[in-house]
Length: 95
Image (tube, rainbow, N blue to C red; front, side, top):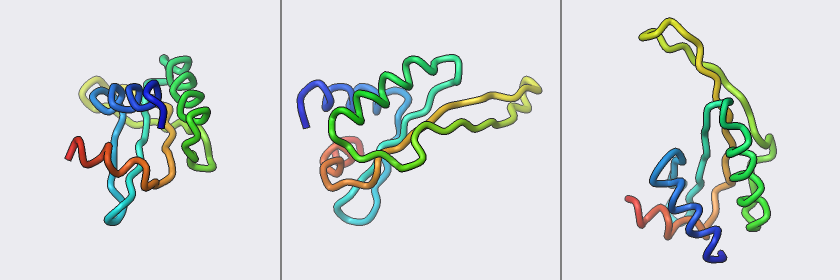
């Protein structure tokens, strides 16, 4: 993993990304943004893909959820990496 990709993964993990452990030696990262920030999410997608991390086959997906506090529907975009041994040290760093 190159320094730029590692720095990006740490930065987004401190913000909007989610790291999850799968089993004893693998982890994945999922990225989520409001659909209003689609350019940013596409940028993260390209960095991750070009960095050599296998992504889930379905690519960037959209979903909606209701926010009852404001009686509104929020739409988000997200994607995830596959579970990888290479991401385990990063997950250990945060857990």
